Every structure is written in structure tokens, then in C-alpha cells.
Length: 375
Image (cartoon, rainbow, N blue to C red; front, side):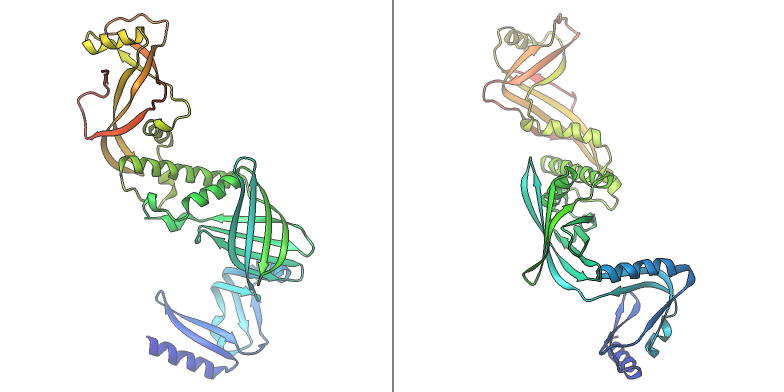
């Protein structure tokens, strides 16, 4: 195949020496790349059904430069015998002007977070009306583009978030997760934006920016928030979860996952108070517990919860989680009358400098869904 590509390139250059030709085999097709060695007079004849969108795209290209793509366009390129096979419907036609490597620095300022700097590496171009920049950051997770007229000190930003690079990766090993989540959170919270664009160390644009908002950025925020929940649950249960191909799978069971997260991360709760219902019985443990409640003595409290985990469409099995505190102040939510066999609601809070803890007590079903002990 390599020999064929070299011979075919030489054959094409012999047909029209004005072009340097390279030939490659890609995805089962032969790809020809033509680069003019000097100016070549050529014209593109576009079919009637595509003339309007072609004219609009060409005008945009003339205004700001850069590159523009047309997909499935009916066109014929004239000006060289090498273009003889280019007539008809083209799957993709790209037109571009000269572009320079550029760096965009986005400064986001929030009253809560402070100032965050994010750099986008890409290309800048110029046209008759102004300049255009397109660049990426955080690998290829985020792409930003903007156009600015000559003399303008403000530019609206278009941001594209594409987490497809995470598909199939472990949720605990997602590149740039924290930084992408911070970027989306700042934009969703309408942080103030300022922009600087440099080419070869020279600033070609400096001014304010309008950040994209609306439902789409809020959807990205929810998506990343849900992944954060999955990451925290994965750390606790050691599930080795991976990002599924469909983003919809990430949004399954949102409410139940948030409740589960509150349980396993109870040590981080802003309000350490917890309430639960207990059925009074005649056991010595219950009698001693009620005695300590009456004299306001701390209790070594342990609660066990059995759960069947379903995450990302997967059956992760049965788990028993123990939640407890070595010294817990317990009060009866009342007024209430304690009767054996009747439920009583208890309010619990760690005593002094104590904190709640949560741990995996076992995997697989247990005989009782909850229990309480005190020492």
C-alpha cells in the first residue's frame, strides 16, 4: 500500500505540476491531499440547492478568516485536471485561510471561587471585518471559539463540552475532571469573563467576554455533578465503575444516588443531626438505651443498612453499610409515649468532638435490615 501511495502521488503531480500531492489510505478509502506550489486560478461551482448556505459560509470566512466546512454539498471544482473527479455531492468540503498559532487566556472571576485562569491553545485568523479564534483546553474536553470585529473590546464566546474521551474510562481516573467541573460551574454561575489572545507573544485582543449560558450549560453541570456522585460512591464501595457510552445512563436513579451519598458521606454532613425510627422491644439493650437517653448519657450508636446497588445499569450486588458514632447524644422526638411494639422516633447528634462514620460491614444479605447497639 505504501508503494501504491507513492506511485499514485507521483502520477498525480505529473498531471499537474502546480500541485504537490500526497496520497494516503485511511479507513478503507484513498485520501488525496493537494497543496498548490503557486497561485492557481480555480473556481467552485455550487449546485442551486446549496448556493445559499455556501454563500453565507463564504461570507463568514471572508469576514473573519479561519476554516469552514460544508457537508454533503453539491459542487464542482474547476481549474485543474486533478479536479476532474471532484464534481457531484461532496461528503465534506473545507475552505480555510491562513491561520496563526495562538493562545487565549480566559480569566473567570467569581465572588465565591475568586479568579481562575484557563488557557486555550489554538489558532487565530483575520478577515476583512475582524478576527476569529478557535482553541481547546483540558485535552479535547472543551473547545472555545469567538469572533470579534476590528476595534471591539468585547466578544461572545461559544463553548463546546465533549466528554466522549471519557467513555470506557474508570470514573476515578477521568483526565481533568475537577478542572472541567470548575470551568462549567463558573460559567453556570455567570462568572465575569475577560479575554486575552496572543500570537507569537503579541496581544492581538484584550477585552470582556460573554459566557454561554442557558439549559445546555446547566445540563453539563448536572452531568458532571452526577459523575462526581458516582466517583464518591466508587471510592466507598470499590466498584471499579467506568463511564458508559450513553450519557443517559449517568442520569439513572439520580434521587436514590443522592440519598445513598448522604448516607456513606455522613461524616462530611454540614448538619450532623440524624433522625430514625426504632420499634421498642423488651430487650436489655433497648432498656439500657432508654435509660441513657433519660439521664442524657452518650451512647455508642451503630446502625446497619442493607442495600442492593444498581449503578449505570449494572447490578453491583448487596451491601451492608454500618453508620455509627462512639459517643452519640440521643433524644426522643416528642412528646411520645414509649410502648413495646410501637415505633418511636429518635434524634441523634455526635457528642462534643465526635463524628459520624460509615463503613462497609459486609457484602451480601443479612438477616435484619437494621440494628442498634450501645455499650
